[in-house]
Image: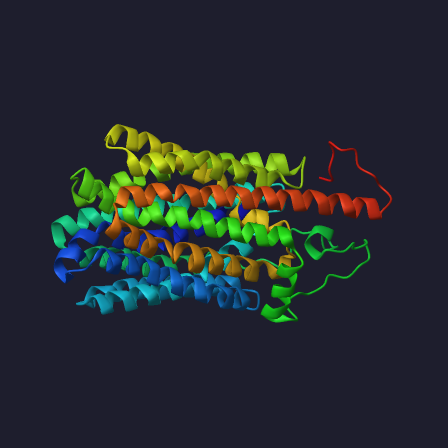
Amino acid sequence: MSYKWRVVAMLWCISFFNYADRQAIFSVFPLLEREMHLTPVQLGLLGSGFAWVYGLGAPFAGLIVDRVRRKTAILGGLHAWSAICLATVVSRTFTHLLLFRAAEGLGETFYFPASTSLISDYHDTFTRSRALGLHQTAVYMGTIGGGFFAGLIAESYGWRWSFIVFGGLGVLLGFVLTRFLIEPVRGATEPVAVSPAATGREAGPGSPKRDSREGGFVAFLRLAMRTPTLLCLLGAFMCANFVAVVLLSWMPKFLYDRFHMGLAMAGLTATLFVQLASMVGAPAGGWLADWWRRRSVRGRMIVQTIGVLGGAPFVVVCGLTSSVATLIVSLTLWGFFKGLYDANIFASVFDVVPPDARGRAAGFMNMIGWLAGGGSAPLVIGLIAERSSLGLAMALASLVYVAAGALLIAGMAIMARDARLQLETRGIRLQPDREES
């Protein structure tokens, strides 16, 4: 195996704990509800508190990642969030839990801007979606592991031991990978000239690279404002993340309440079928997007659109069905379509931003996705559940998926228009059914 794929494997292990640590608390909601007498809104705030801090810290994390060694940001973040996960065991009140969840969000916010940027400097446009898609499967396995083992450990030893196990293993992993992870040169897989799609202007073979780090975060905001496709991708991620967080945060309790499952079984059922299906969908989505990207600048976004619009009907069924079998089938199909979208979250963005702005792009994307999407989802569903039912609240989340699809379609239309205008300024006129690829 070449080193560029070993890098993906090492980061896969870190990403596993990134999600196992954050998912663990949802499987022990019933125990926290009884021990600390928490309301649905307070439980929702535990999910939202993490997401708000994670999202608020993301753009600053991205700014830092573009200036420091990404290996340092990745391993430093791993040690920080694992230590906070361990410290959660001292919680005695809702306030304690909320503070530790918020602090864990701050520790984890560095990981994805740093890891996706690092992977993209080992993998060019021909393997990037596949590499990021394989890396994405760690999210699914971490969610399964966090959901199932947290419930299993909590049933026998209490909810605190779940955090001891996950936090301790994360600290150990960080020490092991310090020796093996190597920092690549930024932009190592890119051509000498910056892509016209990334800069918004034509760059000739002798044109120097423009270092977008010079203007810091303000420069990136200017880049975003003049790149409408990027804005559409940010909005779509906000919507898609809203739906994902709704099902991942509330599904264990939904199964515990409606189908009277035990903690371990509810945690496993809520995550296993979605995540295993996503583990199939993400590599498939990565391969399909890399193939389609060679033929069209919109290739990755087409795959993402299929993902969100294909998954929307199954979100409805998940919230409204009274059959365990139907629920499992719907979770599985939703998970597959979710994987198609997830594989290209960052790869699509990296198609329209310069290499030296990737950390900020990923950080800003996480801010929008988690602050406005994931941050609001647990609380909004908790509020709706208090007034109607948890199942109906989850089913209504499908409308947000439809909004994501609309934003992606708009982004593709803008991208095709811009590609056509760029070619026409060079004196090349496209046929109606062709575009620059």
